[in-house]
Image (cartoon, rainbow, N blue to C red; front, side, top):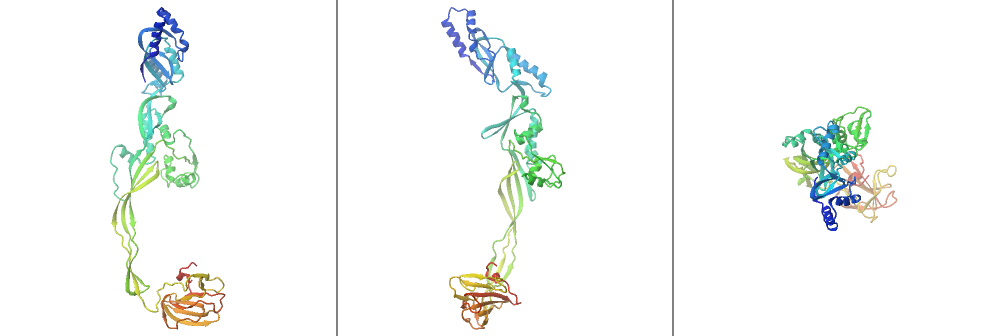
Length: 504
């Protein structure tokens, strides 16, 4: 970079010298200037050999902001760079040239001083301090905050190839070719998925600059490795054992099978692949300096479930009976989703569209409302208010019922658990006063230990919830309760909670 400026200090010094010392000759002035060498801030303490009659263009060279000196003939530096390139760099870096480093710049300024010729020393200094570099491509990576990283590459084509290989960690080569060539990605013609876009979130800019050889990435693999891991290139490895699968290695190392495949794509071609024992796999996942965003379109067939059952009351069917007149059928729709992945990791999705291909069909069920006296509904209620079970089936040997108390009214009402006919009433030493109701649907219910005889005569139909007696402790009972159980027509006695809804 060149700057043009008038050396104000030089002009001011000449004016001051002329005013203060008008009797000094040119040679005397030169001698006076030489006394200022100690304050002339150059690396080589470059001497001033004279003062011109009028300002002249002078080239100054700076390294890292520090003045090295005035250059007598800039062409010598140019020739030095040409010669050094042919001697030491051309074989490794063909087709380019050398240049001054990024921290070196030349400034062309107007000056009255005639400086000592130290071009040879300046060139030697540039060579010794490695203040030169190879002209190569610099790749800058920037986000909304500006440039955050820069790499120097020997061959820009190697960078583009490495970039594409990095992107193909997360998308197919076919998709990348479509995008790179500006071609439309073929539409899906059936259920499945396709990648519809792939891009790098950050901005990549290529410029020409000068870099020192130790800064330059030499080949495609070095560039790909830097894109994948940045400055920290250290890997972690896992050695496979007999029976290892790709998914299994992922589970052992905190990765997914897909991530293991990405990291070792030259060896691993499928997540279901069986691995040879002794295979070394990289299991340090990517920490990339760029982010590849891939959008995937998915088209699926999804079920549409019917709404709740549609109930139609039917007074020709007996209460408690039901009849299905229309079976439920699932409907279907084609649904399109767009999923977003960042460096192979799922980020988000949204529903793009949906199309119903088959409407669901609700189940239609007839429910009987016909009440037939003496015939139960099949749905039992508790035989008392405020119920609590104090002894369930099996709470002691031979106990095949549930004992139920009314927690607030010890001698409260006993209710028919369902509609039916009072079949038997009586008394015995064990059960005390008891009642058996035949529900005329294959079920009978038993109520024991009542305080008094049943309020309803045998042969009388009762409704569900009708009072049939009072809680008591007649017979063998330690306190007032109802001894309750259910008997089927085949003589079996299911657990009463199957009908009352209590927990076993």
